[in-house]
Length: 261
Image 1 (spheres, rainbow, N blue to C red):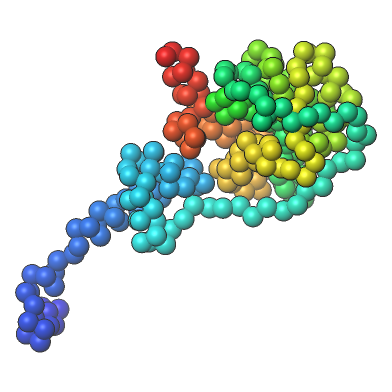
Image 2: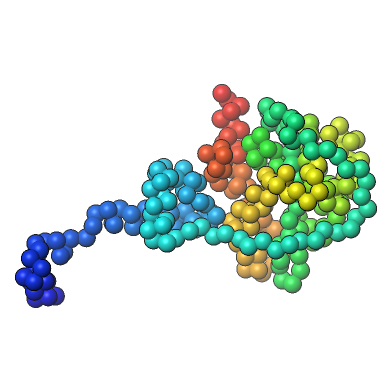
C-alpha cells in the first residue's frame, strides 16, 4: 500500500499526507447520519424537521446529510377503505373554519383506522384534542361500528372535561343515531367534514399516517393482546415523548408548558 501511495505521489505530484487524509466533514456527516438512524429506530416516520428538533441540529444540515447518504424516513402507501353502510341521520356543518381555537378541551376531532392482523382487520378509533394534538380517547375492536366510535369518545370523557365541539367525517358510524344522540345528550356540538373531503379532518389523517409507521408490522405479534398493548403504548409515546412538528415538542409537554405560563 505504501508503494502504491508513493507512486501516486510521484505521478500526480500531490503531498503524501493528503493520500491518508479522510475528510473531517465526511466524518462529521457520517456521525449525524448514525444519530439520525438511532432516532429512526424509535420514530421511523420522523422527517428532517422533527430530526432537527430531536438532535438539536439545523434542519438544513439534517436535510443535506439525508440527501448525501440517500436516506429517508419510512412512508406508508395508503389503500382505499370502504365504510359500513350504517343508516345515516342528520349531517352537520363543518364548524372548524368558523371557530377560533383558544383553549384545551375546546375542539376534539375523531376518526378510526384499521390494521391487518392475521387475516382479519383490527379497528382503532381515536379522539384528538386539536389544541395540543393529544390523543385523549382510544378504542380498539375487531369490528367497526357505532360502538367503536362511541367508546372512543367515552374513554376521552372519562379523563377529560367535555369539549365544546366534536368533529368527524360523514362516515356511517358518525351519522348513526347512537353517536349523534350521545353527543347531544352530553352537551357537545357536532361538526362534520363535507362528504369526500378528508383534508377537513386532516389532524386525524396525519396522526394515522405516523401512528402506523411507529407501530410497525402488526403481524410480528403472536397474540392480539400483545398487539393491543403495543397500540396503546405507541399512542402513549406519541402523547408524552414524540415530537410534533407544529408544537416542537410532545402534546403533553406542550400542554404543561402552556398551562404553567
